[in-house]
Each structure stands twice: as C-alpha cells, then as structure tokens.
Image 1 (cartoon, helix red, strand yellow):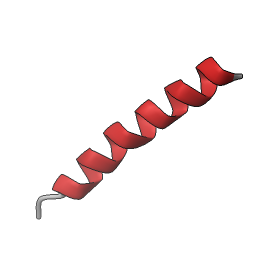
Image 2 (cartoon, one colour):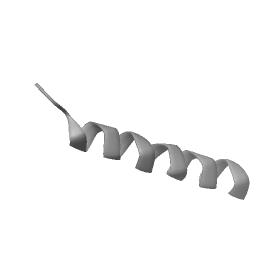
Image 3 (cartoon, helix red, strand yellow):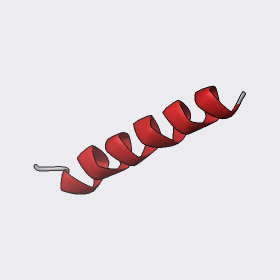
Amino acid sequence: IYKPMLDRYRKIIGQLLAEQNQSS
C-alpha cells in the first residue's frame, strides 16, 4: 500500500507551518 498523497500533504503541511512560524 503506497501513500503518495500523504507524502505530498506532509510537505504542504511543513511549508504551511514554516510560513505560520515566520509570520508569528
């Protein structure tokens, strides 16, 4: 069972978190 979407989501979430941290 492969989860390519999960990997993509993880990258998106990571970028989103980084942006939020910088914005804070």
